[in-house]
Image (cartoon, rainbow, N blue to C red; front, side, top):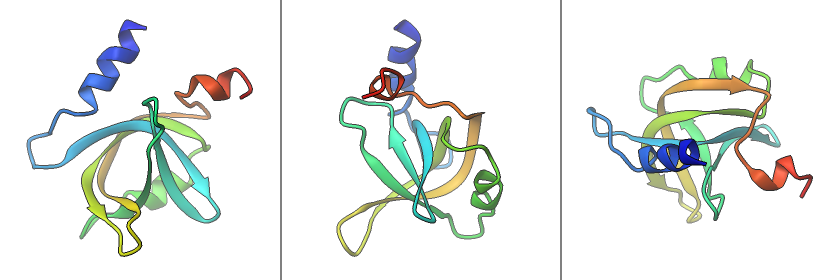
Length: 106
């Protein structure tokens, strides 16, 4: 439980280059990659490459869902949806997620 609280606190901490850390489960929604945050609301973000980035192709080759830390910038989509421009992804654990409801079959 303490580890989860530390992870949630770290999710709000900015990193040096102005990006933020978003901890959650990366999964496919159709052909799109999304991050489902490890918070009670399970906020969802569409993942797109940051300008000049080349991270998502490698992430697509990972066994999904995968737990990890997405480092990037939040932007609002034209349709009002939430988007993360991904600089990098760290601490990826393939085949795992961080959602209690999923673990309990809910």
